[in-house]
Image 1 (tube, one colour):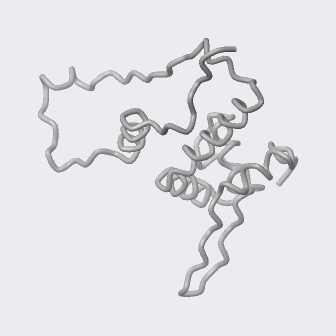
Image 2 (cartoon, rainbow, N blue to C red):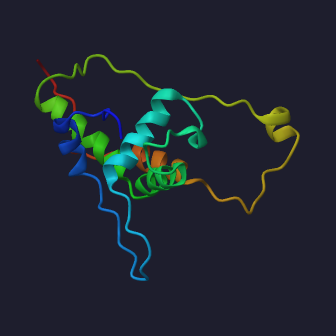
Image 3 (tube, rainbow, N blue to C red):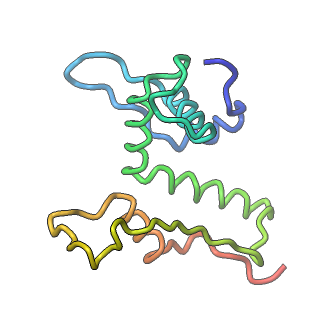
Length: 148
């Protein structure tokens, strides 16, 4: 890897929250460490490039993408977000008076429900369940302060 995108202090905070890659009981290659995968994920997110365009100094694009999806399924990103948010709150670097909501809009193809019936065999994506879990059953641990 060239110059890492994260400073050592930043990586130390994140490394503690990332699960170590599991070693296969069937032998084979050793798992790629978390840091190069994380740096590869950051490169794709920052550049907006396709996974296949990941430079050769990072692990393979399939390894980085697989790790990204594993961490998503395991709830690692949510755990990291909550931990860093709690740190900022403890340092009084968050202004709870001002909040932003982020939303996405994707137009329905061919006009949506009127043009086709949804496939009953489809299962909701992992993203939907993560979002539902977060917004329908929020944790009590992070709460805005009532006064300044």
